[in-house]
Image (cartoon, rainbow, N blue to C red):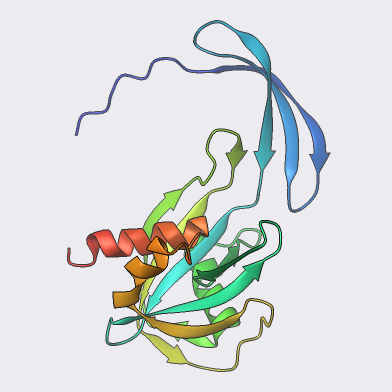
Length: 183
């Protein structure tokens, strides 16, 4: 597919920090949009994350936890995942998080996609992986991530339709799996 012409770039004249921590950085950018209007635009940086959709050896079940997220006050099914450690490759993070949160070690892991969940204001790359097969190696070492269980792949569409999968990383991974499972 031919790339479209790149036109309409937003110009950044400068940036300033409003707040910074290891978890979030909030700033203001002095920008000019393609129409010529110039104004300050909020920016938010969140650390990169990686997650994995783990299929069992039969390929018929996915490892997910049902957990509460206090900020939006939502219960939903989620895949194992977390934030990248400094200088850690995303695939290492994904495999490490699977093992820490579930006690399973992926047999193989492949990159599916990387996406930005809120691209208009927030930079927060999410690296999504598919793990095929998993070996039980120990009890989970992270105890605040919910209790993981094997969910039949045949139930995934229903969980999305009933809004029981709403986490962006889990949703993208599951939708990607459902769209390309046979390819």
